[in-house]
Image 1 (cartoon, rainbow, N blue to C red):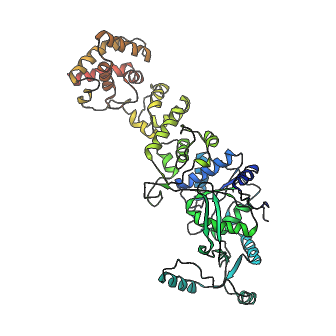
Image 2 (tube, helix red, strand yellow):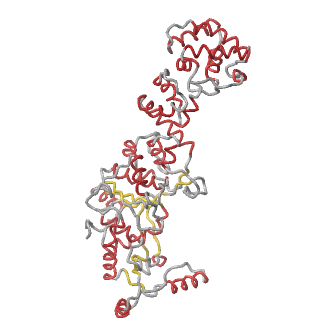
Image 3 (cartoon, one colour):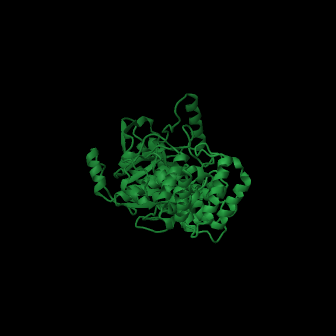
Length: 504
């Protein structure tokens, strides 16, 4: 067999099956079509596939399924590579890195599929079908008119060897169809949905090889998975209905059936799937909005998977240790932008100060041009208050220039401040800050809090007016002390004077 491993028949006892699966090297694959867009649901499939391999010390394989030329988009393979790399999902085998089971691009594997199909014809598990499009259309019309589920009527299923040979000799176009059992049932096991049984009579004699000699997706998928030694298959639950057909192919060849993990879809809301058509964001789109790739990966993992403990924030390495298919839900997952932002914020908190500054600096510099600003100090103030890097420019745009603001901002119910009390506070603050010789957080803090103690007022009575005066903003990355330290003594004094002027 072409690059394949001959394996034993599937073990029916679930405990034995699990033991068997775990006793051999786990091999998983992600097999996207290059359509130019990495759907969040597709990336989740890739992630789960990757995590299963890493959890079990196995191999993660990338296979490009590019036989659907109508949907093929130039440059889409690079989109797949770039997305997976940004997500940290490094593959062990694939088109660009090679491996013992290649080629890893489906269009380069075309020669073998017909050979496999002909073996099924020889064994009686498949047959030649010579029906043309006109006849098939007519059959479908009759079935629809009779309210019968459309399926092939098996017209060519029982042709004699002589009839078949006569048509082949005459060059009549044909497809090769899978010969489904007409009676009984087919049962398969899914790790999420358990054992599923279908009536064989409901299974269509699906096409394996088309008239042009090309394999159908369903057939190529099975052959490729077997010849690449794939042990675990992760895909969307829309493939549940096709799985009995896959299993009958495995059985016909005498191949071991892989472990199936069928995942419910990722939804935009209760009724709408995420899709490019609806303008829903891809992984790249989300990262461009200022989200950390590792946070997005963490969030995607939680779309339909529940960790065993209380913790939900994981690095990719931590996910590989924690992930278990038993935590995958049967229910569709809702893409929650609020949770995505919360997960991103949690990852930002986890960053080292150096890493945060490295990420944040380009965003800071969009609005902060002053060279005398201590970026380390600014970053230390920003990090615990940043949810999204794209928010930073607006958070710090007051540093270079005090924005215009209304004096009503000085009024704060919780702080018990008014315009009048704020004027009093700023007048008291001005000489105190002017007397601070070494301008740093510690000295500014001491000066302001000594004033608060001497005036016997609440902290907010002093701090809110100072914060308002030096920032001109309702919401700031830090309090009065931090803001004064960041913008410097001269600018702080100047802005407090302007505040006094506005309030007078």
